[in-house]
Image 1: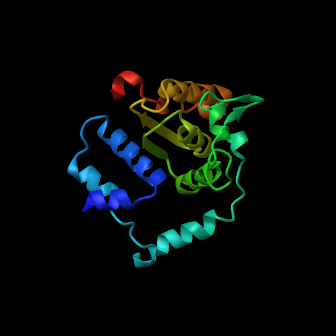
Image 2: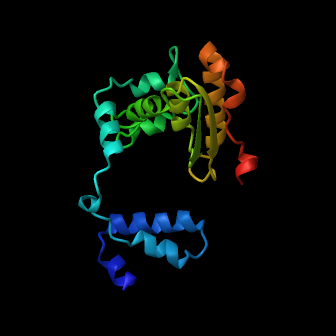
Length: 190
C-alpha cells in the first residue's frame, strides 16, 4: 500500500520523503514507525477544539511590534555567528520573514513576562538562530540547552555557542545571565 502511495507522489515530494526517511534513520534502513509517520495524512485543523488560552495568547501576540531579523542576528554592524549568508538565498525566505523569528521573539517575550526563570531545550539547533532569539527576548534568568547531531551544518553547534557568548558579552542584561545560559558542545550531543 505505501509503495503505491509513494509511487503516485510527484517527483519532488518523493525525493523529499526519501531524504526525510534517510535523515531520520541516519542512513540505516528506516524503521516501520518512521515510514508510517511520514505517510500519515495531516490531521485537519478543523477537528481541533478552540483553546481559550491560545486564543488570548494569539490576540495579544499578533499586534505586538516585531523586531527585524537583521536586528535580532546582529551586534552593531556585524552579523552574529549563527547567520549563514547562504540562508539568505533560500527560496522560502524563512530567515527574513516577519512571521518567523520576529514572531518567536515576541512569543518568548510574552510567555516569559513575570517569570523568575525560563528554560528552553531546543532539539535541532542547526546554527543557533532560536537560541539567539530566546536570549534577546527573555529578560529574566534563562537557561538554553541546544542539542544537534551536526548533520546539516558541520560547525553548527560551535556557531550557536559563539553566538550566545557574543550576546552575553554585549550587554549587562546578558552578562548577568552568564551562568544560566549555555549551549551544549558537539561532544555532549553525539
